[in-house]
Every structure is written in structure tokens, then in C-alpha cells.
Image (cartoon, rainbow, N blue to C red):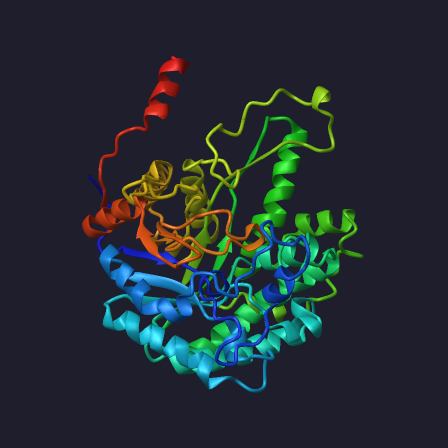
Length: 467
């Protein structure tokens, strides 16, 4: 068996809007995802998260599932609109009490709560006032973080300030694919900065409220490879890495925003000049507040081909995306996780790294006996964990792994069409059924090691044909 380091933390992850439901109960306010999901055409299946997995009422059942899996930790997010229905000023005790109960229930089950403060459900009144594109939202987030961590910080040992600032800013404010559905690049860049600034300010507040807690942030990172060795493809790779990865990593680790990426945004018309109008004196020092860990979400890699040089004039491709894809269309590329962990460790040296999300969408339903043979997901998890272990053995301070996701859930703009869970959910009856991937994960957690796994017959045939 391939064994992980002693003390390695095994968990599963979810987020509030994707699983909780109870959209109008106990004083919860409207979020930007409530408003966005009501927009015609915004969600692939026309659904919303008003019921989702009904975790708000079924959390005890879900903790029992976690116990059956032997999980050491559960990463969940707090719904800002439950705590502050209008965004700030007056908090809602009934909403905060839900997380009190959840934390206590997890601890009673021997499961560590790993709390994300913001996983995309901004209260709609704050968006009406400008959202993350305006600086006042920073102050609102710090107020919210203060109340939550003051309440939970006596029991929670690890807090994540934000999940995936790139998605918050670019998908939400530049590309319009996520809530709030805006298409405004200057607003997106300001939003990215304000999210990072609120992270730095909240870090200090969390440390004051919970001196023994560890604090970090989670980034979705994508290893980038040029499709060929041509200067044009290498330039496309540099630009992607600057906008997607370094734009967030560099300021968090005290380097400020990357100059080459700033120039790219100016050239694209996203910024008026090399002077960033949303950055105030002292901001960058606040963003670079020391953290205890970095959360890394990994799903796939990017292979970059120049959009400037015509295909006929470019060098032949030497790097191709593989044929194996998940149901959401992402390439299955486990070695990208190893590459990513090695790069982050080498270039930024975080004290600890947690893989806070890693998983795959496969729509495998129960068979006639009620069993769910999600072979592809089992292969995915095994291969990515093997890549993680390679990184550990090479010196990466990897401290834990959270599978995405515990439950099939509301998958943002895809609605309920894509299933990432290791537990199947019938969204009509709310029945939960453990998939075979959950059984595999349970065995991995119990042994702190990877068992041998036979190659999928289709993969074996593919290798024979390639000989």
C-alpha cells in the first residue's frame, strides 16, 4: 500500500448554497445566487438552490454518513445571508444558531469542522449597493467574519476566508456565468482586489477572536502548459498563468500584482493604465497577512494555444489534451495535481497545503439492486491521490485532502445536471445512497493509504491498442 504521512487529515467538502436549501427559513435573506438563478437562461436546467439537498434539516443524517465514512474533517461554508440577511449591521441569531448546532454535532461525532466563511453567496442587498466591485463590501465582510468567528471560534480550529477568488471575480463580474452575472472587466478586477483585501483584514480579526485557530484561503489553481514550444504558445501560457494563478498567489504571498499580468489587462482594455485604481496605500501589506495554510482546489489543467498566431503559421502541437473527460467536459489529468503542488511549494512556500477540493462529475445512477458502480470516479480519486502522495514524498507540506463533494448537489450554472458527490442524492425524495467511490474512500481513510486498484477494462484495451 502507498501510505500517507501520519496525521494526514481526510475530509469531504460542500458549500452552503449547494446543499442547505431552506432558502426562506429562519430569517435567511436573499443571496446573489437566489437572484441569479431566477434569471431566465442563467441555469442550465432552470433550477435553484432553494431546496438543494435539504441539509439544513438533514444535517444529522449527513453527519452519520460522515461517521460511516470515517472522515476526520468536514469542510462546509457559512451562508452569509443566514447570518446577516441584509449583508451587515444586524445579525440573525437563528441563522447563526444553525452553525452552532452543526459544529457541535460534528465535534460530538469526532469530526473536525473546517469552516469557509465565503463560498459565493453574497447577500443581495450588498450586490445592489455595488457588490465586491465596491470597497464598502470589504467592511461588510469583516463585520460578518467577526460575528461568525466570535461565535464559533471557541470550537473551530481552522477557518478559510474565501473560496476561489478567481471564480468570484471573473466568472461573476467579467464573464457573467456566475452570480451576480455581470460582464464588466474593470468591476471584476476591483472585485478580485476587494476579496483579497477582505481576506487580509479578516485574518487579523479571526486571530483575535480565536487565537488558537489556523487561517487560510482557498484558490482554484490550474497548471498551464504550452501546446508547443513556439514563442506564441509560450506567451499564451505565460498570460494564462498570470491572469489565473499569479494574480492571486502573488499578492497573497507579498509580491503584489504581477506586472506582466497588469500590462496584459491594460492591453486588453480592462484597465486604463498600469496604475491600479482600486489599490489604496497599505492594501498590499494587508493582503499579504501571514496565513497558516493554503487551500488548493484542483480539477484539471490548461493546454494553451496562441490565439494571435494562425494555426497554419504556428509550430505543430506537441502537447494535447487527453481523451478521458468527466461529464462536465474537463480533462482527467492527475499529474497536473502533482505539478501544481510542486510549483506552489517551490515558488510560494506555504507552511501547509490542503487539497480543499478535488473530484469529478459522473452521472452514475443506482442499478436494479440499488448499487452505484461509479468506476470512473473511483479511478479519478485513486489516481489523484497517488499524484498527491508523489508530491508529499517530494517534500510538499500536504496536510490533508477533501474530496469534492460529499453529496451530489446544486452545481451552480449547471443546476442539478452534474453529480460530483460520493453520495448519490435523489433530489425528489432526498434519499442518500453511498456510491462505490464512497466505499473506496472509506477504505483509504481507514488505512491512511491507497489500496491497489485494477485498471479499468476500457483503459486496458486502450493501452493494448496503443502498443
